[in-house]
Image (cartoon, rainbow, N blue to C red; front, side):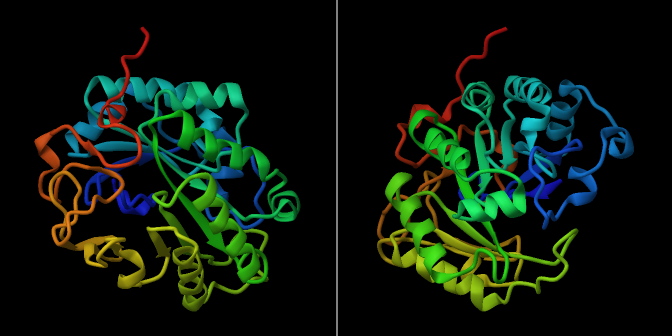
Length: 311
């Protein structure tokens, strides 16, 4: 059980708990993997417990979680199982979150996201060199996933980039990345810049300085991204949500703790009335109300209501 902000998702049911689980294996080979003991292992080495989709959904309800997250390893690895869990969750009013690298082909991508309510996509860098040399993958399919999510689905999604000193943290690359996001996906897609801690096969790189994260956040904001965050460090300013019109602090965060809430129940700034993009259910403390979430992105309100699933 995690706070939803740990995924990280700051604009999808903020302040609510999420039940997190994963399996084993990955379709990328990132040298810096932060969950290498899970993603690089064989299923028989790691998977100690198994659960039916119905069991997972029922456990989420029992724990008071508003959503279930497929995380730790990429859910495209357990595509069919994730879909079955999502269907069981949807039948019980529980929402589902994919924490993913976005590295998937068009046909399974369309099938997978038909059942998801939210996603955090790991945009690992903005050069083909990084993806090829460090992840054994390609950048373009990830960009295609991001554009697909934005323009062809009602899925709420946010982007995370782990900044590794000397690899993907240069001003030029951050400028190009954030300009692309603003231009192709729009200003309302939140971006999270998180700190690297040496892991697996990249122990020669130092931890990310907090100033690097703050610099990336400034670049994103200057390029029109309305919601830019720092992560994996203690930074109340960089972790809080601000109104892009009047500058008021809408949701204060200290780590994963909600410290302030100045949004109306339907996601508007209490100071100036500007809407904050996201999916909201009101302030923390109403987790058990089971009220219908209010969508405040570019899609119409009905888009946040999951479609009827085929049997």
